[in-house]
Length: 393
Image 1 (cartoon, rainbow, N blue to C red):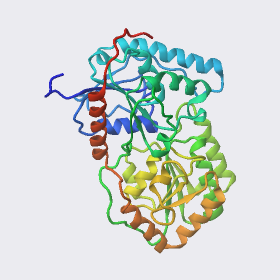
Image 2: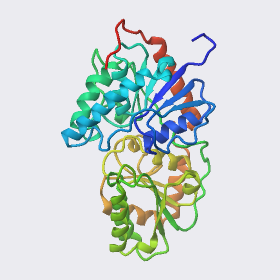
Image 3: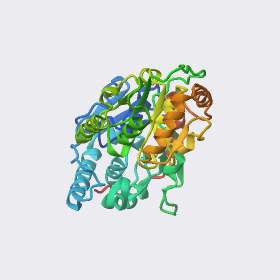
Image 4: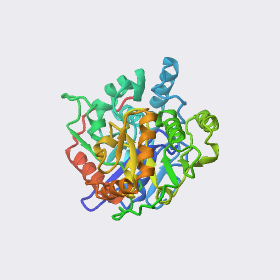
């Protein structure tokens, strides 16, 4: 690579389903970026269908990985998944996209394991993106030690999506020195500086994949306790992924049991998130535990909405409860119901929260996120020193 050529970055993902990590990468690559990007992923999925073909060469020869992943409690299934990652590493190493790359960016923990296996000789700098904390709950009893033994020791740089996530990374001589917290692109093209607070609440929205851990059932119970029989509507924006369709059925049955079926609207996957956010009066985030980042929280703050979120994790790094949003204990439907009553009953409270949300410090647009990623990629590339060894997987 000459001094005038853009750095060639290969972005590796283990799935193309539209989860948070995949959407964040798609948003990053959809922005104008100073590096030459290639995308290496599996043969099916929809998260990257809108990427500009003139800028991103997308590979489709990675084997489809078994469902369940490394976090599965079944040792045999997790072992099969790791075997598939090893097979994927062999395919990756032979790819011209990989051989031509100046730097490899592993978008997920599973992708990081695969990249580490593909280049044990450290011929190319590897940046590992952590989208969640390094815990057994997030990576599984087999995936966590595999990630620590392979990906962590092989990585030249670590990007974490929050301070909460980065705090889970151990320190030591075999752990890369370059590590940083970078905000993930969340679909923010511009920030709304002046809130538009309507006098009455007509719509309360929740954005996110329909998954038990995301807590849509907590939201429905809180909504029923506080707003059943009113003119207010609850909008669930998102769809189930990875074989979780049964949860959507459970949510619909729960709405019927709670007597709010006519007030709950399932919107499914929505491409125009900003348009959806502008149509609601309050945004709710109700995950059952500490969310690593909470992209929907950032989106709501950027649109100057009153935001209610689960305390801890990433949301707790952005929201000061009672100032620019409201924080509630995870899984606490009663606490959420009480906050909803307060917000519906007080236009002044909604206005104050929305005004402070519009002024949330440090919240970046997607274009700003590109600049931060570019700087870190370049720093890691310049510091990389390959080891004189042969690749093995």
